[in-house]
Length: 169
Image (cartoon, rainbow, N blue to C red):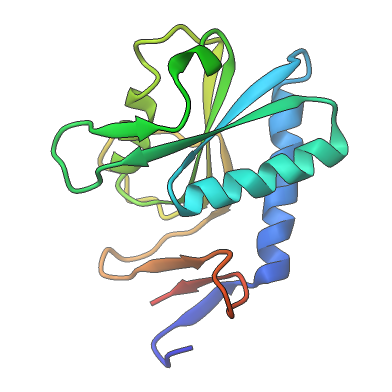
């Protein structure tokens, strides 16, 4: 770890946040038989996989995984998914990402689902930095923190040789 990095969440704390979010998702969907966890590639998808693992332990909810791959540098919505829209049509969609900063990534992620009927869409982020410039609200948040714009939140998830961590630099 570089000197300029401050540890915000360790592996155990990340798992505690994911566990809590899983219970909140379950509570929000008690009458549902199936939900779609749409993880924004790649760290959002990894968090969604962990949510699925916890949900499978605490409920009978069928969870369909969906990978949403966005072109983050484009000024237009350019996205690919690993499943076609029939897999999420008329279902509850939970859009998952690692960090919410400006809201652009989540806004683009939501755009993928706007032309398909669905029951409801909810958002999950591990860390909300509170610097939104897009009108995005998070439904389930692991950690909400105020940072200055020049700071960076770095989420390390599922990387070989490193433990899960969230750093502020």
